[in-house]
Length: 329
Image (tube, rainbow, N blue to C red):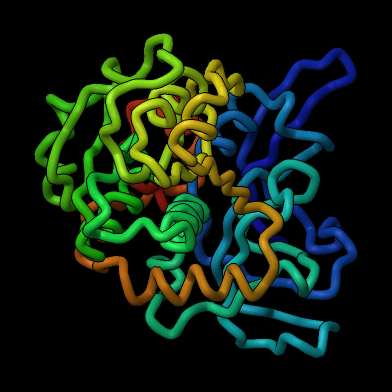
């Protein structure tokens, strides 16, 4: 038997969630079974647990886009019992049973080796949010945005992706401008992560002009919509903005002016289907460039029973940093 947070939907479309004991024979027929230590709570998980549709594509569903644990059994020659592993994305918690359970059955290609620098708890403190933040940093670097290029803005800075992005960029020597709707309550937290300047999200959330004053060398945007349009319009010539979120909306109400007149690059970041080599690159950089003391400072650990309430909080924008789920608690 194993324990899981199970999302269900009846024939009338009524949705529910419960902590459930399932038999291992209920696991999907996949070659690698993992004993899960920890999962995480991400914005997409919040949507799945609170709203279900359109995130959940098959019912019943175990949510959780992340997990870390140890291989229990494997028919894949690439993995052996006892291997420490992490999984991020691959439609876990959407199309396939995810990480909010004490066991998971997975395809071998979905697994990434647990970095030597991390425990399974620390790996989930990083999670998809931190891994996505690192992909954004890599995108900036690959477009020649260096610490001496100028300020880099991070939106949703007190959230999971934003917190890791602020901490990593600051450690690398960038001048980080942290944008948040919670400046008064989270200002000290963001400064502690390394933010050099704080701005309220209202400065960027209204309708954007085609071009604004060139202000940022680059950006990491978790918000989308008008916020992303404003950042792009205020990016310096040959700057780059890495876009990875859509909390404000999926639209992009902007013009081509920044791309043509300033040669700005908008780099989309999709963490779900990245190949193994890119994942390993991101995780190796996190192990090097993310201060574990700052990681600990941004992390809260909860049990499975606490997840539904925390899911509502993350959608309300009141979660700070990272939330790790101890699935055995």
